[in-house]
Length: 341
Image (tube, rainbow, N blue to C red; front, side):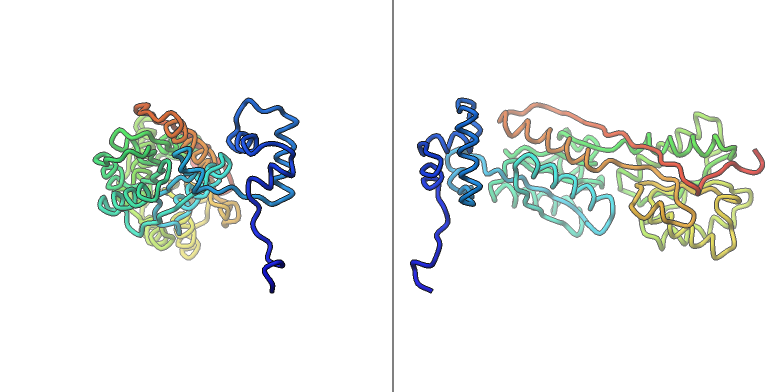
C-alpha cells in the first residue's frame, strides 16, 4: 500500500476547514464554551461526525489539567452486587463524558486499597470511586492521603469520605414487616459474612424490625453469599421446630436454601415462607418466584459520579456527604400467609 493510500487521522484543522470556522471556534465547541452561536456549534459538530474526528485527550489534559478519566477500585466482580454496582458507575461516568479506568482487587485489604488508589492517582485520573463493601476497605479510606477526590460506595461513613450506599437496613425492615404481616410469629435470618457492611445493615434492619414488633429474635445463621452456604443453612433450619419464615441476606443464598427445602420435601411457601435480597435477574424464575428486595444500582452509580464530579469541577474539599439510595420490596410467590394466622 502506498503512502498516498494511507488515510491519516483527521485533526482539528480539518474540522475547522470543513465547518468554515477558525481553529479557536472548534476548540470552544469541544470545550462546551457558552459563547458559540447554536448554528455554528451545529456546523462544527456535523463536521466532526463527517470526518470521524477524535480529540487528542492527552493534549487536552495538558491544557485543562483534566484527563476526563475517572478511576474505580472494585472487588470480586463475580458477585452480583459489586458487579452491578461497577456497571452502574461505569455507565454513569460515560454518560457524563468520562472514560473509566478500573482496578479490580481479589481481596479488599487496607494495603491493596491504598495501593490501588495510589496507582490510579499516578495515572492522572480526575477522581476515584472506591467500591468498599467491607469494613476493612472502609477503614483503609480513613487514613488515605491523596489530592485526588475520592467517593466511597457502600462504605458507610468510610472515614469521613463522601459516600453513596443503598439503605440496607430499611430494605431488611420491609422484608420482615411483610413476613410478620402474613402472620408469622418470627423470622429467622441467614446473614451475610462478617465484615461486610451490607450484611451488617441487613441484619440490623431484621433485628430492629422484630424488636419493634415485639417478636422473638432467633440466632442468625452466617453464610458467605454463595448458594452452597444457603443450602447448608437450609438443611439446618429444616430441623428447627415451628419455623415458618426465613429472610436470607442475598438471593444466591436463598437459591441454595430453596434447593435444600425441596430435597427435604418442605413446601415453600405453604410450610415456610422465604425472602431474599438483591432481586437478581433470575429471582423471578426461582421455584417458587422469590420475594426479595431490589437495589437500584443505576441510581447508586449516578449519585456517586455526581458527587465525585462536583468535587472534581470545584477543585475544593466540599466536606462529608452521604447519599442513601432507597431499597424496594418486591413481593412474589415465595412468601404467603401462615396457616396458623
